[in-house]
Every structure is written in C-alpha cells, then in structure tokens.
Length: 167
Image: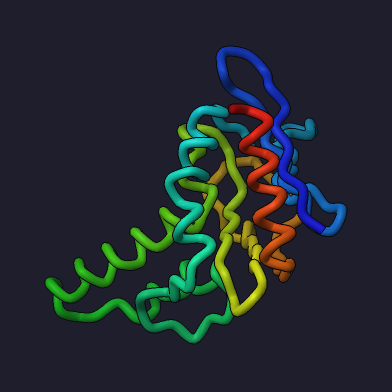
C-alpha cells in the first residue's frame, strides 16, 4: 500500500506524507516535536513530472555495487570509486544523475527530507529508504530503514492521482 499526500502550509511550502504500508516514512522528530518532509509543491510536482519516465523505466543503477536496493546502491556504491581521477569524476556523475532521477530527496530545497528512492524492479516498484546516517543535526527519523515492493500499476495510479489533485 502506497499513498502520497501533501499538507499545504504557507508560501507554497508544505509537508509531504509518503505512506508505505501504513507508515509515514517522511516522519521525524526534532527537539521533541513531530514533523514531516517539507518541500514546495511546485518543486515536488516538477520533480515528479521530470523524473517519472526514469522511475517507471528499466533504469539500472549505473555503477558497480554489491547493494540490493536503490537506496543502498547509492549510499554504498562509493566503496567502488575508481582510483583514477578522470574515471572517478565520470563515476560520480553517473551515480549523481541516477539518484537525481530516483530520489525525492532531490526536491527538498533547504528543508529536511528523508532519503527515499523509487526504482522499477521487474513488474514492481521498489520504494526504499535509509535514514540511518543522515546529515540533519538533532533529527530522528521514525522509520530509519526499509524496503517495499508495490504493484507497478498501483504505484502509477497513486502518482497520477496525486498530480491531478494539484493541476
């Protein structure tokens, strides 16, 4: 089960709720208060529209890694950075482009956003998150790590319905 919700706040900003199997994986605590990933709705819709073709296609992770999920492939592929400087730059560019297309983290602006990756695996959509080693001071994500495989058509339906609500 996957649901995407947006709770509007002020000046075009709002909380994004990414609910997977009943858990809002964007939830975090800061100074004893509960918050959710925050972004601009315009930026979120732009990211979805620009990257849906990559998310829904067979777009394999472009560099060597032993990791199995999208989030872990990104986080742990730097173990394989080539020693040669020129090859290292190409390596980093390939992995950066891939994550830009597959992680909602790309639309966070300066706000706190969980590290969540979407990628097609066979006839399913893999949603993975890994917030164990994030870089936000005093932030504690409620759901630190996980993976979920959804029916691809159900995922597409939810995203298209989300887009329609704001267009």
